[in-house]
Image (cartoon, rainbow, N blue to C red; front, side, top):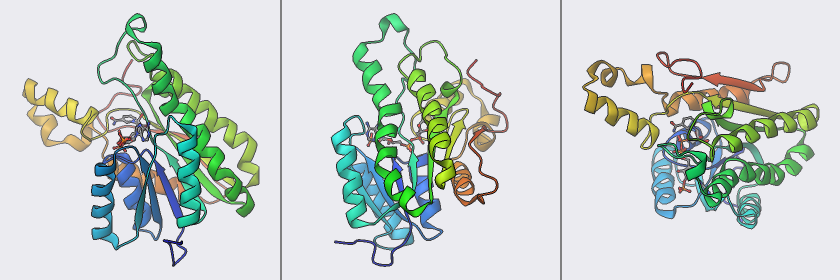
Length: 262
Ligand SMILES: NC(=O)c1ccc[n+]([C@@H]2O[C@H](COP(=O)([O-])OP(=O)(O)OC[C@H]3O[C@@H](n4cnc5c(N)ncnc54)[C@H](OP(=O)(O)O)[C@@H]3O)[C@@H](O)[C@H]2O)c1
């Protein structure tokens, strides 16, 4: 049964949480898209979908419970999205997994390395394979991968994070080299610094509070990237004309050092 009776274009936000994921969904919905939100936690997804529906109207977002470390679940969710909403026009692979406080290689388990790498990389490979056939048939489609400082720099403590993110960057290059000429715009966005949200942004804010950093707390947006501003970058990438497609770009807050984790 179609849940997209007006045949709106579909954005799939793969790894949809209250930070970048929700902001991207809202940005695209505000310009006429319907959003498919993929993540593991039902109550968070319900809350997000309800908030979006109340702001933009019923049916503007639907959620699909998915564990991106399990290929069968990724395939099942995309098949359901295709049945319920139609072809995906934009796929944003946004899921990522890292430790907030790093851990040395010798203290990092193989299980963590494997499960984080599945989230950071394998899920993107599976999701890309799910959306490419329809995109190729239509000769149009946008695929955006969310990267991080760790996509370009290996830093101490992040052995279970960076290798997957490096791989994601190379996957974006491969997708571009294989399919750009067939109408697929793939972009890798290096989010180079903390994003305002519960996890990294929250830790940063709490640190500033402990340290009495009033100036920083008063001008958060100069130090920590705002999800809604990042969402504007995803939209800009989507809107780019075919004569000027960006493959990769990096963004950081005004007072964040370049490749700040080094
Ligand atoms: N936050 C930062 O400071 C920061 C900085 C630089 C780069 N980034 C990048 O930005 C992206 C995340 O954006 P965000 O931090 O704002 O997060 P977000 O959009 O608020 O949430 C991302 C969501 O991904 C979902 N996810 C994680 N593992 C999953 C899995 N195995 N299966 C399905 N869903 C999964 C999580 O939901 P469930 O737990 O419900 O599954 C999580 O809420 C990542 O790629 C990250 O590397 C973030």
